[in-house]
Length: 67
Image (cartoon, rainbow, N blue to C red; front, side, top):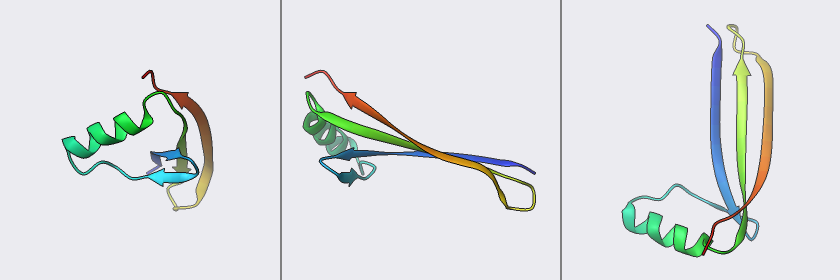
């Protein structure tokens, strides 16, 4: 069976932000990001049935949330 996996991480000022634990933390994170440039990194991996990596990549996308 082939496996396709992906995940994202947001970085602000070269620091990775984790997933918010709850609604309040999510609101605080969005407030911190509003009007500021940050980078969203997305990693994707495709694994062969034997578990070997067929392909993998990471792409960084600059984002600015409106204030």
